[in-house]
Length: 124
Image 1 (cartoon, one colour):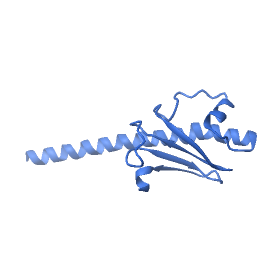
Image 2 (tube, one colour):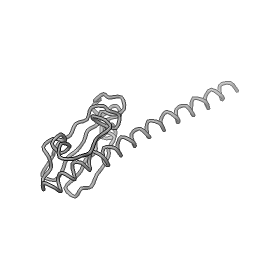
Image 3 (cartoon, one colour):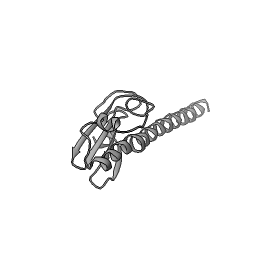
Image 4 (cartoon, helix red, strand yellow):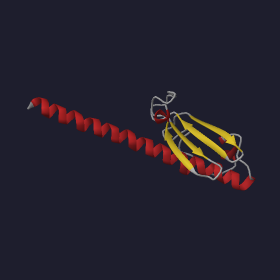
């Protein structure tokens, strides 16, 4: 009986932790798309080109960001990948670039302005 109670308790603890992590990933993905992505897309509309750096796009706007980096203030990489495409790579909640093994996220904008938010570990 005690083993059953412990097993059930551990199961619910695991579910709660996983839900929290998923919510954090969703929050981060939304921030990258809706805040940072919008800054780059607004720059593109105004100048008819993708900026070379995120800083170039951010200087061109009046938007004040709550964080330097991703939704949690952790490091973020911006890369222009073509004339009409770019991506953000977030180090994730833990602030570590883990080559796809941790909670890193990649938000990609393609030439049709379609976005995708991918948990990097799902690519490896």
